[in-house]
Image (cartoon, one colour):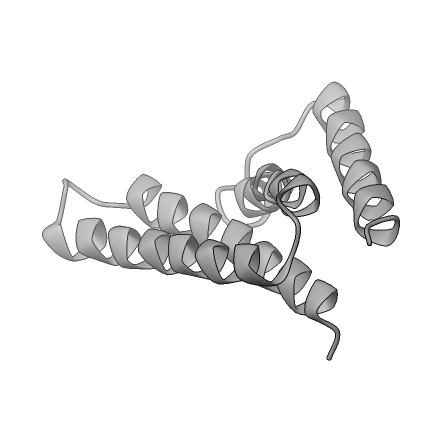
Length: 108
């Protein structure tokens, strides 16, 4: 597999881990240590994936892809927390995804 594709996939996994770790903290009942440690473990896994992604790709391409964490967080908020997302936020999500696609496709 191409190194560029590996780097992009690793960065997307990183963004997902960052969101999942934060979701675990959000769902944490009464500051239970298991949730706290679980959230940290997922968050650290995301940081490690980011380090590996940087070894395979360009910072100027990968760092904007990390903004997909905002998109993942919005989906988690809707489907797990049953939050409503305003139209302006949906427009922002579409712009983030469009920008990430343009940057990813046009990278070296």
